[in-house]
Length: 367
Image (cartoon, rainbow, N blue to C red; front, side, top):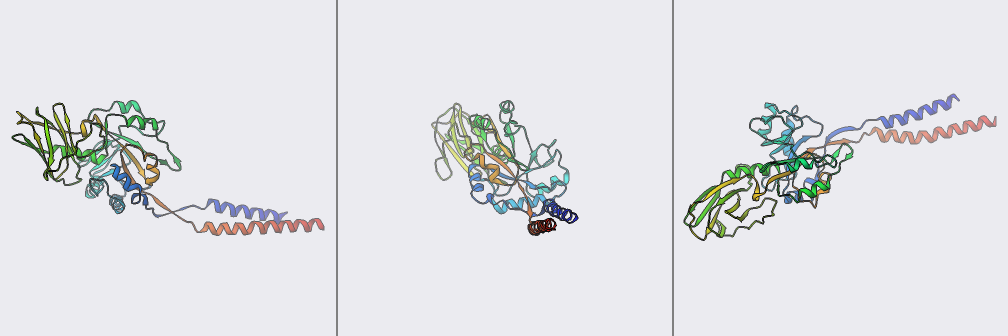
């Protein structure tokens, strides 16, 4: 009886050791989806890739993460169709100290978000003002109350630990039918900057608009030109006709659209556009536009803690929504080599022990 108890305790100990052995966090994982298939598709759609640091590491305490995340991202993809370097960084928490702000700017970042209490000096702050896209959490009333020319930033996270979160398809469908511009943090900010830097002049019946090259991303800017004449032709400096933008266009493109009192023009940095009118205008007024194509306001969905682009984006392949993906490099789980050894030991020990006990019982009964 005593031998049987000892054998039983041995098996329990082996099994307990195998199940209690910890996994080991090693180096860092690479998300190959950034480079393969999904990443290029999202870039072509108009998405932006920014940074969220390294999984499990507090960026404000480990400043090396800022440059490392930038380099990791740039190894796999451009940040946007407008620029290669990432300019948006997600900070967890409500404050960014001066050291973190300096490190962000030194690494080329321009935008931070999205629950900060105040904007760090030298950086643009984005605010989570559109609730979440998660089913049961999305807030349509909040989305309907967006101010004109504002940017609505909606939170999204596909997974929380091992839990898969579901998007609100009704909210998605409703959003796609609204009079809004689908954009990203970086695109929205630089579109506004570019619009303010367009230079307009008039000579006879020709209006000329010029936008110089930009130091950062080459995002087009939009202006509204007001005059009484009709437009005959709109061309760039090479004489090529500019694209006529449809009133329902919700993704940023270069071109123009005639409106009741003149036209909307979206011009690319480093170009000059000429507008030929059917007569000399008495006056020409122009106003930079914060929102593309005369739409009411802008919307972006921000993918937080994006460790696996396929998992985070797979439910949005057919959607018109545009995302700002904050990429987080995930920790690599190393194999604990003790586990296979323990497993083999258990596999050997259990049948041997059982066989020994059976033979011992048989001997006792025969005696």
